[in-house]
Image (cartoon, rainbow, N blue to C red):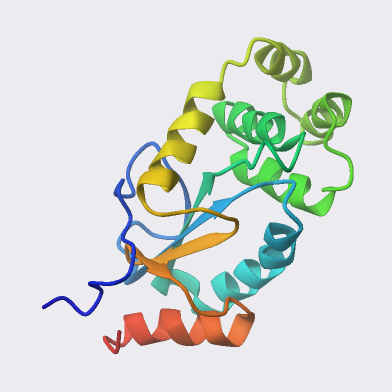
Length: 183
């Protein structure tokens, strides 16, 4: 009998399509399904950053888009902007900017952030207008649905949904427990 029998597991394994920070061979992988306009994801952003710093090369972090479009009007375009930035090699820079400036996610702001990050802002604007990255965002979202995600942020630790608190210490304890083989 599996110890994770009653817990949701990641339906789509982490792979080449994902945005990752940390070594591919890290002992622990933390996947977040997030929404750039969600206030809870904004609160989780510095927590994940601190956990990443504290665990260093033992942790690989993956972010997947899960825009809650019925609650957050700008979430889907923000996710598409992050993917557009990713297509230019700066997903994480845009990811950080979107959470740091969550109060301003209208298209003109997204294009301005691209400019500030040294991206081809007109290209990003065209890609937003034509929804070039909508399929990638939708694929992330659907993988979350299949994995039992129904709100944001939702975390998975080594493919198993983390249903406990995600403040720094509880999340760190869960990650270190996996690293040490406790979980």
